Length: 122
Image (cartoon, rainbow, N blue to C red; front, side, top):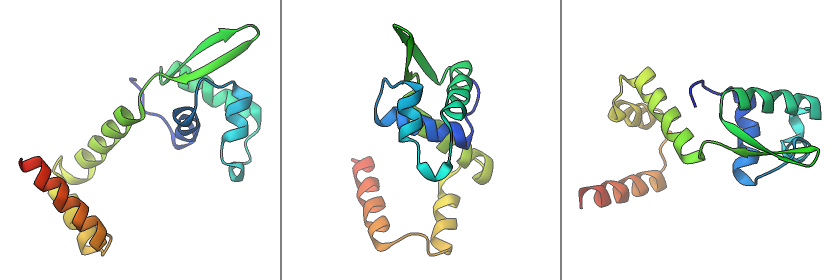
């Protein structure tokens, strides 16, 4: 996937990552109703995602069935890396320090980070 996806396109991707293949109508029915999107809006977003090669489609009679062309994990990894690069000079420690300074890390988070670090050291 060469081009980054927008927040709106991401909402469509979440639907497809949860269940696919789906028709455009299926996606429209599963997107958060608070967005108030019509089926036409969802079709436009699917078209953009096809152009960005984030989704692929198969023809089933007169319908198109859409599916993700990029795994959620790969997308999250790329977006996480871009965030850390852009805001923290590519270093993870300043991000964790920033969150800790703002009391955004719970005791549960700390325990999970400690367990992860212990596992990584082994």
